[in-house]
Image (cartoon, rainbow, N blue to C red):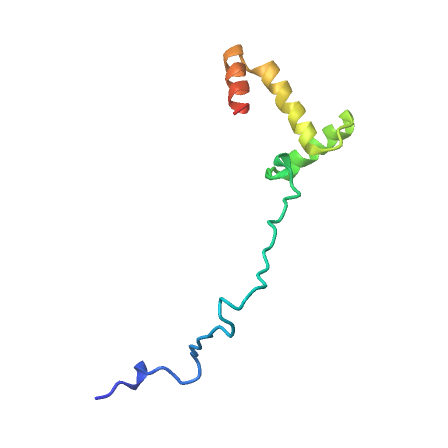
Length: 100
Protein backbone atom coordinates (compact mmCIF):
# COMPACT_ATOMS: atom_id res chain seq x y z
CA UNK A 1 0.00 0.00 0.00
CA UNK A 2 1.66 3.23 -1.12
CA UNK A 3 0.56 6.56 0.23
CA UNK A 4 0.64 9.05 -2.62
CA UNK A 5 -0.86 11.86 -0.51
CA UNK A 6 2.48 12.49 1.25
CA UNK A 7 4.32 13.38 -1.97
CA UNK A 8 4.91 17.04 -2.64
CA UNK A 9 3.60 18.36 -5.90
CA UNK A 10 6.41 19.24 -8.24
CA UNK A 11 6.77 22.95 -9.02
CA UNK A 12 4.74 24.35 -6.12
CA UNK A 13 7.59 24.50 -3.64
CA UNK A 14 10.84 25.60 -5.13
CA UNK A 15 14.00 25.66 -3.06
CA UNK A 16 16.56 27.60 -5.00
CA UNK A 17 19.87 28.55 -3.47
CA UNK A 18 21.67 31.64 -4.66
CA UNK A 19 25.41 31.55 -4.90
CA UNK A 20 27.38 34.80 -4.67
CA UNK A 21 28.63 36.01 -8.02
CA UNK A 22 31.56 37.91 -6.46
CA UNK A 23 33.99 36.73 -3.87
CA UNK A 24 34.24 38.70 -0.65
CA UNK A 25 37.79 39.71 -1.51
CA UNK A 26 36.77 41.35 -4.79
CA UNK A 27 33.87 43.39 -3.44
CA UNK A 28 35.20 46.85 -2.69
CA UNK A 29 32.03 48.89 -2.86
CA UNK A 30 30.27 48.41 0.42
CA UNK A 31 27.57 50.97 1.02
CA UNK A 32 26.92 51.86 4.63
CA UNK A 33 23.75 53.72 5.33
CA UNK A 34 23.72 56.37 7.98
CA UNK A 35 21.18 55.75 10.72
CA UNK A 36 17.95 57.60 10.16
CA UNK A 37 17.66 60.67 12.29
CA UNK A 38 14.46 60.86 14.18
CA UNK A 39 12.52 64.03 13.49
CA UNK A 40 10.33 63.37 16.50
CA UNK A 41 11.37 65.02 19.72
CA UNK A 42 11.17 63.31 23.08
CA UNK A 43 7.91 65.08 23.91
CA UNK A 44 6.27 63.97 20.67
CA UNK A 45 7.12 60.29 20.72
CA UNK A 46 3.97 59.11 22.52
CA UNK A 47 0.28 59.20 21.83
CA UNK A 48 -2.52 59.50 24.32
CA UNK A 49 -5.89 57.98 23.53
CA UNK A 50 -8.82 59.99 24.85
CA UNK A 51 -12.52 59.95 24.15
CA UNK A 52 -14.00 62.30 21.57
CA UNK A 53 -15.73 64.26 24.35
CA UNK A 54 -12.43 64.79 26.19
CA UNK A 55 -10.75 65.85 22.93
CA UNK A 56 -13.53 68.37 22.29
CA UNK A 57 -13.18 69.72 25.83
CA UNK A 58 -9.41 70.12 25.42
CA UNK A 59 -10.00 71.94 22.11
CA UNK A 60 -12.45 74.33 23.78
CA UNK A 61 -10.02 75.01 26.62
CA UNK A 62 -7.25 75.62 24.09
CA UNK A 63 -9.37 78.27 22.37
CA UNK A 64 -10.24 79.95 25.67
CA UNK A 65 -6.64 80.02 26.93
CA UNK A 66 -4.89 80.78 23.61
CA UNK A 67 -2.79 77.59 23.79
CA UNK A 68 -1.74 76.45 20.33
CA UNK A 69 -1.05 72.80 21.09
CA UNK A 70 -2.88 70.13 23.07
CA UNK A 71 0.24 69.20 25.01
CA UNK A 72 0.44 72.78 26.35
CA UNK A 73 -3.12 72.51 27.60
CA UNK A 74 -2.49 69.11 29.17
CA UNK A 75 0.66 70.42 30.88
CA UNK A 76 -1.35 73.35 32.27
CA UNK A 77 -4.02 70.99 33.55
CA UNK A 78 -1.42 68.73 35.19
CA UNK A 79 0.34 71.69 36.83
CA UNK A 80 -2.96 73.00 38.15
CA UNK A 81 -3.98 69.57 39.46
CA UNK A 82 -0.63 69.04 41.20
CA UNK A 83 -0.78 72.45 42.90
CA UNK A 84 -4.47 72.36 43.90
CA UNK A 85 -5.32 68.72 44.60
CA UNK A 86 -2.19 66.98 45.89
CA UNK A 87 -1.01 67.31 49.47
CA UNK A 88 2.63 68.36 50.03
CA UNK A 89 3.91 64.77 50.34
CA UNK A 90 2.17 63.68 47.12
CA UNK A 91 3.37 66.84 45.38
CA UNK A 92 6.96 66.16 46.42
CA UNK A 93 6.66 62.51 45.31
CA UNK A 94 5.19 63.59 41.96
CA UNK A 95 7.99 66.07 41.31
CA UNK A 96 10.63 63.51 42.27
CA UNK A 97 9.17 60.77 40.10
CA UNK A 98 8.59 63.04 37.12
CA UNK A 99 12.20 64.24 37.22
CA UNK A 100 13.59 60.70 36.81
